[in-house]
Amino acid sequence: MEGNSNTSVVPTARFAREQADRLLGLLAVQIARTIRSHGAAEVHDLRVAIRRFLSVLAALKPGFPRHESAKIRRELKKIMPLAGNVRDRDIALRLLAKCMPQAPGAAARRFQTERQAAAKALTVSLKRWVRRSSSAAWRTALNGEAGEGFRNNPVGATATAALPRAAKEYFRCGRNAVREKASAEELHRFRLAAKNLRYTLEVFAPVYGDSVNGLRQQLKGVQTLLGAINDCATVRRMASRLDGCEELVEALKKRQRKKTAEFREHWAAAFSSGTEAARWMECLRNPAGARGVARKPPSRSAPLTMAAGQAASA
Amino acid sequence: MGFWRDEVVQRALGDETERQMDEQRAWIAREPGNAQPYFHLAQFYRMDGRQEEALGLLLEAVRLDGSFAEAQVSLAEVYAIRGDYEAAGRHARAAEAAGDRRAVDMLQRYGAT
Image (cartoon, each protein chain N blue to C red):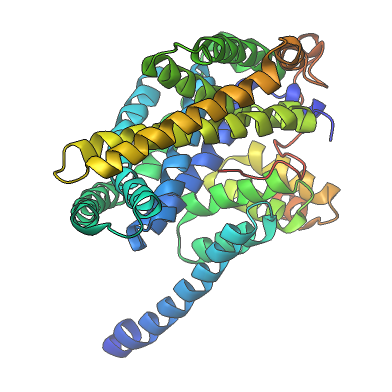
């Protein structure tokens, strides 16, 4: 599919509101699901749902009342670490089983106990969210007035302002992270930039259509590798606090080195010449159907739907 | 009568509804790009009076398949109930374009267009 020209001319405030309605509803579904069963998949999906909703609030910030939007972001950022605690234990248990299949023993029991406590804390927080009817209250709060200048600005123009900026930061951090002597901090910064670009790209996907599918796939590949590196670092930190986990810490160190090397190879293959990065920047600056949209009057009839092929990806 | 209705009949119906909803959730997990299970799950949420969740699922269904007429009609209904006739009209017209005039007729009947 080409870029959706109908979506490009939709006023940003309307686009923001419909995206928020959709993602807030999906978040509420995910919260209900996690309260019922807080397995690894449910907690992972909850974190993704929160991130998606947060990225709409961030990417389309002027489209929402400032005070209310900030309050919602703060509330969600309280839930994220609670879900993160559960997720970290799930990763620890998975890596423990992978690196030391014969002797998981005391460490596994410890991680299991910590996971149960973390899941309980998360469930309490989610139940409070449901009790307060937060999704209805948030929807009402977000439906307030958007900034005057932003209200009728076509979403195509908003996308071409936001995405190249996020992509520029991504490529800059990537070049730093891929150096032989890059620090853990630089890798972490790159991971955040990759996440930011991916979720911002998802927010504006209806504007670009299939033209950015290649970039989304590349981002997914980079994020998988960066995620694996981060998983090793997180579990290493957790395991180093426990007695008798020296073997696991060593195995994780080795695995982290291997994944870092894989990431460097992957990046070099995709972006070493710089032409691929330049191609993506050009594509993000000129979404099909968004060219010249600023001069067209906003469409009053086009619903903000995307054609098939924009399947939700985790 | 209250005991039988609340503790036996409603509970049995509730359990059956939850089972059906779990089936739809499992379908979504298997095929996240298919609009159908989002639509079906939304109908269960609507029956349960949970309009917020239903709205999110319906918008996801039409995001995946813009020509999904039944989902567009449901969205027009949800927005009309909320009093957002502009959004209701948009989705009603999208449903009409996909071959289903029910929502357009509904809005005309109530003088909302």
